[in-house]
Length: 341
Image (tube, rainbow, N blue to C red):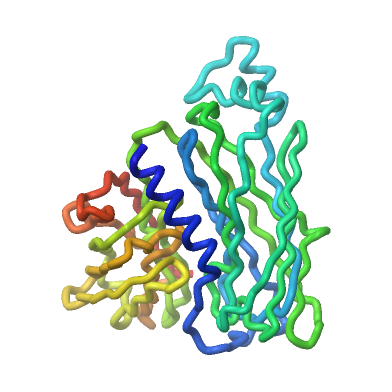
């Protein structure tokens, strides 16, 4: 429970302090005529714990104002009916759905929207129904610098009802008919929405982390990452990623985005196919926004054969995160893949 109290306190402090500043030059990334991918990241939470639903992009395109509508749907009635007939499974998600149609599983704590100049303002409206919950967030930036840097555009913090059963999952989706973004000229931005899932884990289970893979053409750059899925206080750590060195065409570059929290870091890429990133966060604010907290741009060899793939793994002996007291946090590591298109 101590880690839950510290996480709630940290997130509420950050919400009161306002959205973080993204120190990246304004650039539309050459995508003015293309759809902007707007993705809800997968999220994980424990009963009674803190949940962060992160909305992110993969290309910078400055936004002046917008409206985002996110639906969180309960498990479908068919699942609940099956469970009442005696179906079983991890957490009995059908039973959870039945119980929680009377009580909303999530309570909204706050919303943060990010702009480069720190001038984003937002207003949230939250509604519950028998089958789900709807969040509408309207926002604007006088400087028009929301999403001037790709990555986290907004984060929605919730508390999860203690009665929710581990193993329950909820779909996260953007309502495209009501989600609208406009640029500094007032022109509508075409959106390519990506849905995801909120999963409930058992209390005390380790935090899931992932070597997030990527795809690229030969001679291009694969964007890979070390991913987290829920907010918890991190004062530092080490991330060691490995891959097949024959697919690489140059030295990787590393970014720790300030929207995920304050940090300083060092990089060791001296060994081919192996990258070690050490970082510190003196105020333990890092990972207050979960997601790609260590982002890596990996050049792919020009002579790499299309269809070639390499496992992207986390070295368990060289990967750890530290809590505010300097102790190691329990982690469950997952691997990914780098694919040459």
